[in-house]
Image 1 (cartoon, helix red, strand yellow):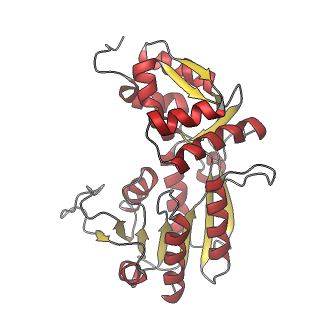
Image 2: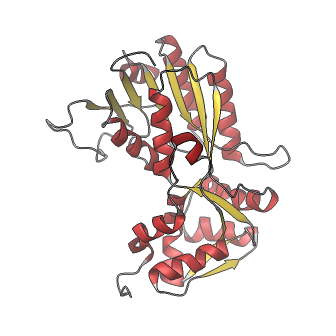
Length: 302
């Protein structure tokens, strides 16, 4: 963008990617407005005299009037409302308001393209939102990252209490990218002076990793024996809904992306270095940073 000091609205500001986007934008020459869906949520960066380019606003995403208030007089939007069955409605509302306000740019966090013969419901949601944004005159791009390393935090309970990783991925491998690298890519395109032209940005991490390999790696960082147990789809869905108490749509999504990895080989190299001109963060480093999440309090580090 050619604006000297743009104002950027960040949706999903309390999430894994959104809070890092906010943190990185705080280091740049811009104003940042973080959107909170729950005004009681703790903000990622506390307001103080040292952070006078940041503000926050609470918004009900079903209300276009409230979205308009959040997006008034801004230049760009980071579009991320959190994965949920309401995502199409929420993000469509934001896009329609942005078009009405003549906002210049939207960078949307999306999902990888899935082959036509494989169904992943969440990917289908993203394709519908992408189609809506592509039909506007707003300069935009779609960020299409593979699985986040941070998604392993969903598995901490079974790892800590049963020493197991469950799944239906067999010996297939999944590509993982650090959410912080994805946030840095988002900031690059939010601030880029050249037009984005509706490009799709494929974001992959440095390697594809099997669940068996993840069990070995987590065993290494925790000093405890962790194993991967491949179970049936029905068993896995039951564990996720009945034992982990996940919403059905999320449990179904976790099963679907395991199946996707089995049916569709994922990349074994990164795109981060090409985009950011530096090496990507690696899984082993992420696990070292996060190993306390996988440890029970009664365990002692070796």
